[in-house]
Length: 195
Ligand code: IMP
Image 1 (tube, rainbow, N blue to C red):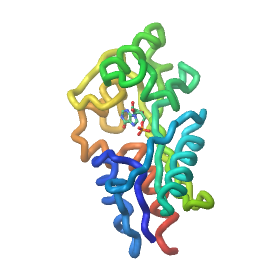
Image 2 (image 1 turned 180 degrees about the vertical axis):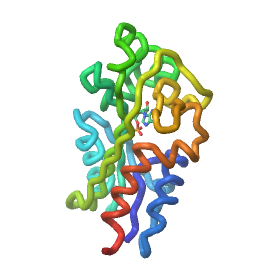
Image 3 (image 1 turned 30 degrees about the vertical axis):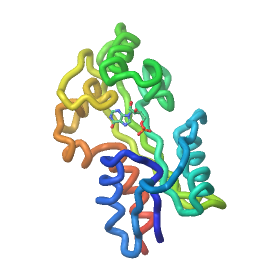
């Protein structure tokens, strides 16, 4: 089976290749070379967005496509920023802007109520239908100031208790062994591997 990853993010593609490359007979292809227009992520769930991206891209390419949608859910904010994670502080906001707004909105929330989780939903579809769905979660706490230098998204304020550090303080290979994306890929891997 050939699986085209609906992303132009080289890090994401490498991570997917490293994990799903273990499945015999599965070829992972990047979107490079395909003229696939951007899909508007306007659903109100991660599953809705990932399904839309997988199905629309599969139809445009005539291929089997893997799409993902991720974000951060903060309990004290009723699950926000959720599917709006990338746009929470406006279109194209920096990690610093995202973290600052989140910290402002959690200003009066005490440490024990600052629980949060990163979520990834993966969908594999052919042009007709969804073939597989998988999900992964990573539980943590939103601390009160940014820590660490790897400033992707909410990583500087997401404290991961099992390793005692924020995601921005961890080397990327360590983060990638614990992340929501890694766990979702493991879920998909168990579904794709022959029993
Ligand atoms: P995407 O669906 O993977 O593009 O993620 C949407 C948004 O969620 C990103 O733009 C980030 O703001 C946030 N996000 C997703 N995964 C992570 C992560 O591992 N660390 C920090 N922020 C993340």
